[in-house]
Amino acid sequence: MTPHLFGHRSRHGDEKLEDIKGGWGPLMTVPFAKPDGTQLFFSWRLPTVLELVDIPTLAEQATGAPPEVSEGAAAIVQAQEAGLMILAGALRAVAEPIEKRDVLATMTVVLADLHGKPDPQDFVPPDGPRTLHSKVDIEKINDRAWVIERNSAESPGEGEPPMPLFMIEYLVHMDYGMLAVTFTATGHGMGSPWARGVYRNVARGSRLGPEPPTDA
Image (cartoon, rainbow, N blue to C red; front, top):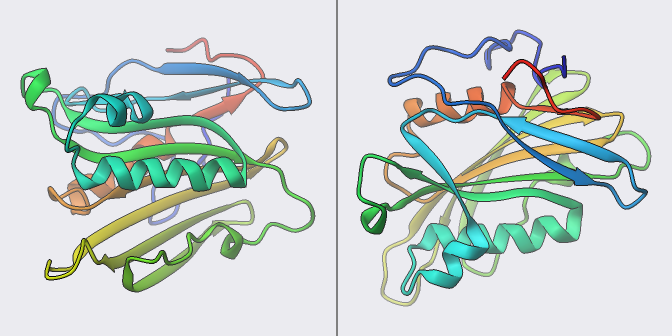
């Protein structure tokens, strides 16, 4: 069985997923290859109340898309520069009709090559030109895993009130490199305790290995 990424107990929990309203959906898996040809499989679960939509497709199709889409697209560009993009999606609630589903948050998964001792500071997103101020907190889970939380205020434009931006990034140092599972949200309560629980469980229930999991 491909092991869960966060199998160590901390205030972020252990590898057993917490109960959530509606339950958890099936295990989803995407195959990908590193530049050296190494074949790997990344797997994750989402709550049944959420869906994951491809960000580039959503950004192309949505006229006047909400800020989360552009923020997610910007994160993709940054991630592609930092490492290998595995997954980039927008989280939406499935209770609404498809045409009315708002983007609640973005989820990106990146695998970066490491040279030398891993430093979580290298994975803290820098302030952008619209950033008014930001605060970063880094928690070490164990010798191979960290959680980075970043809260910032972004300027949507002159005369507009600041927009809060919440980001939480789960880092795991593996034999394949540094895996970063990142969630970003600008509102809709997706920085709430419920949402944090979703992010935490999706990250710690994720898997990365040379074979697809068989216990879906």
